[in-house]
Length: 65
Image (cartoon, rainbow, N blue to C red; front, side, top):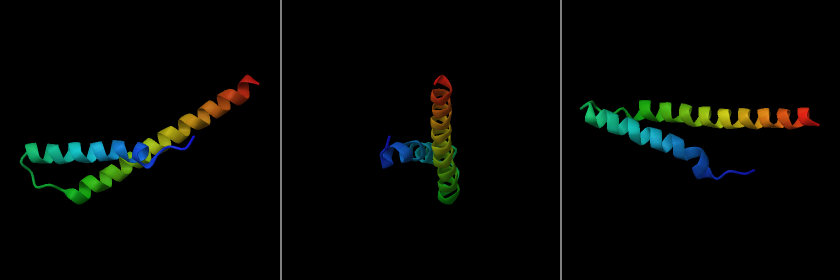
């Protein structure tokens, strides 16, 4: 099943915005690059979890036959 671009980037976008809000409320200088790097890792982690779930479902279907 093909997922949209927004499906993959929305968790990262939300994470990025939350990190910006945390920086603002803590009265710290905003670290855009650091937050962006963390956001990329969140998107990659989300994608890997989704891929692993698909692999487990595929193995489960194969074992049912």
